[in-house]
Length: 184
Image 1 (cartoon, one colour):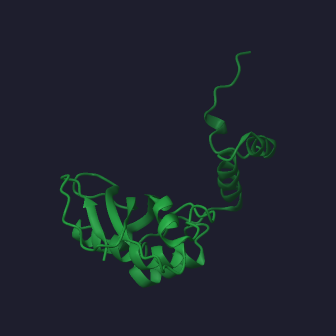
Image 2 (cartoon, helix red, strand yellow):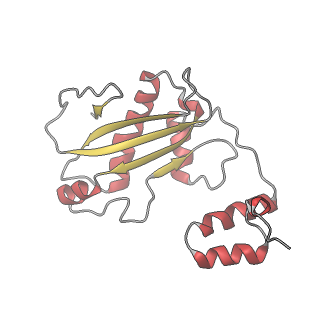
Image 3 (cartoon, one colour):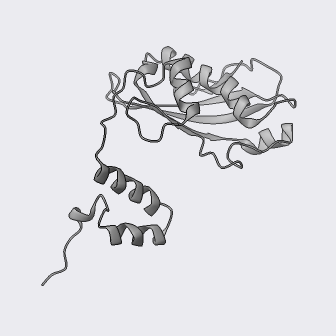
């Protein structure tokens, strides 16, 4: 069972297990806002690690997502409106305890996206939508071909200057019209 290591009031409940706890900072992004106008919930968890873990993905699958749904309900947030889970974790501890590579080391960004119409939803995210109801009440607008290409080039731009030059050559940068033009 997971442990909420710190809530927004700064309280730290007693440990629920003797296993080493992997610290996980969680940011949940929702399609709608709460009564205070916030679109995000931010909290920390402690996930118990066993030395016999099969792998990082099954560990996260088993420990994180039920805790996320529980936190949504505890905070009065509808998991159906959840569009993104972002995490920052103590993966070094996972590797030390298990001797296995972390999700991060395996190339996963440790972010999960949800919502009908969301571009790039993978099998894992689709299964989480089915199992936990994440993002099932959210409709992401479907984009046309030019918008999709602009988005993809924008993502590439985040990876470096070569991708940015490719986007400029294609005249597909999303913010190009907002740039100031040189004075004549």
